[in-house]
Image 1 (cartoon, rainbow, N blue to C red):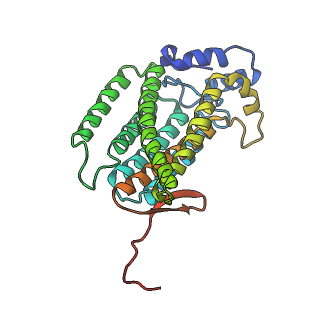
Image 2 (image 1 turned 120 degrees about the vertical axis):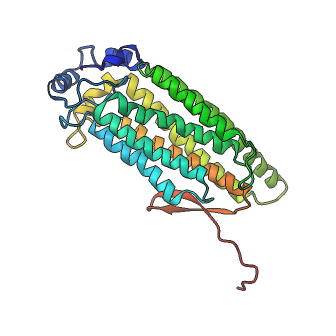
Image 3 (image 1 turned 60 degrees about the horizontal axis):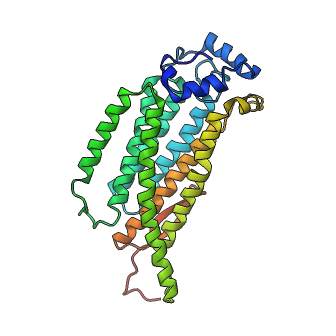
Length: 320
C-alpha cells in the first residue's frame, strides 16, 4: 500500500504498518500493487486510510463500498430527518440533520479520494454536529424563542472556530481529531444521560403514585435506548474492530462475491452511526416537545424509519 505522506504521524500509520504492510496477506499485497499502479487519486494525502482495499473494483474510486454507505448510511438519515424528523419545527433540529447530511457527502468524497481536503469536509462537520447537539441538550427546556443561556450560541460558535484552528494545525495527526471528537461526544452523552435519567425517575414516581407515565418521556427514553444500542454497543465497537484488526478480516472482505467484494465492516459503522444519530435527535425532540407543551406520538416514514410527530390539538368543541 502506498500511504499518504501525512499518515506517518497519525494514528492510522501504526494501524497501516501493523495490519497492511506485514506481508502476511496476499490479498492485501495484490490490492496494494494494483492501487499503486493505476489509482487515479494517488498519491493520497489524507492522514487516515481505511481497511477497504484501495481501487479494488475501479481505478477511479478508492473505496467504493464506503462511498455508497456514506451516502445511504449518513446523508440519507440527514435528509429524512430534515423532511420528517422535526416535530417542533425549530432551526436547531434542522441544523443537526443538515450537518449529518453534509457529513455523509464529505465522508463519500473522502473515501472516494483519500484527499486531505475531503477529509476535512468529513471530519470538521462531525465536530460541528456534536456542537449543535450540545446546544440542543443545554437548551432543551427553554421556552420558545427565549433561550435559557442567551450567549450559548456565541460561545459554541467560538468553540467551533477554536476547534477548526486546532484541526487544521494538527490535521496530519489523526489522533488529535479523534480525541477532540470523542471528548465532545462524551460531554454530550453525559449531559443527555442526565436529562434522560430525570425523565426515567419522573415516570417511576408517576407509577408509584398510580398515574400513567408521561407519554413524551416514554418516547424519549425509547429513542435514547435505541441510540445507546445502535451507536454505543454496535457502531463504535465495529469501528474499532475494523480499524485495529484489518489484516485478519481483509482476506474475507476481498473474497466476497461481486459486487460485495472488498466490502468491510466500515459500512456497518456508517449505517449505525447515522441511525444512532437519528435516534438521539428524536429523543431530544420528544424532550423538547414537553418543554413546549406539545404531546407527541411516533410513526414510521419511508416504511421503516421511526420519527417523533406532534399529536394534533384536540378540539374541545368537537363531539364524538
